[in-house]
Image 1 (cartoon, rainbow, N blue to C red):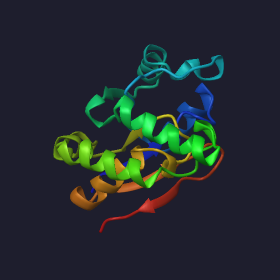
Image 2 (tube, one colour; image 1 turned 180 degrees about the vertical axis):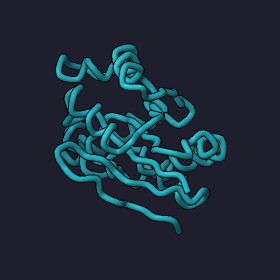
Image 3 (tube, rainbow, N blue to C red; image 1 turned 90 degrees about the vertical axis):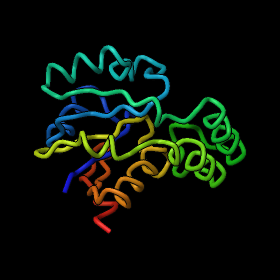
Length: 171
């Protein structure tokens, strides 16, 4: 059975991010962001080219999966809900129900996750990457749930300065 961790950018610096990937024995990072940049100097290490260079130096393979990224329209749907609830993107704790429904229907239902499951390492772990700190506030948790349900992937969510927490198991 394959193991997958999910991880966000927020709350990490470059060193702690790579350290957490090493601790989770990550051999492959799957980037599921549409735009592979993060605003602000605090997170410039997570911009695509810098991140790929750091991962290569650490011996971690990188793959971008834009087909799993939410569209700009879907992101704006979530931003509208964030504004309604008066939470910022970096402090969001959960996804809007409308976002979950539309992301699942418009994106996730059309992606062949068997192809993703097939490239997960037999030894070690793969990681799904996006930006949000909490997986419940990010589409990566929806991808992870689907991989668990359809491909019996064990999923753990990694957060900064916390232990790895098992979120879903083989069903």
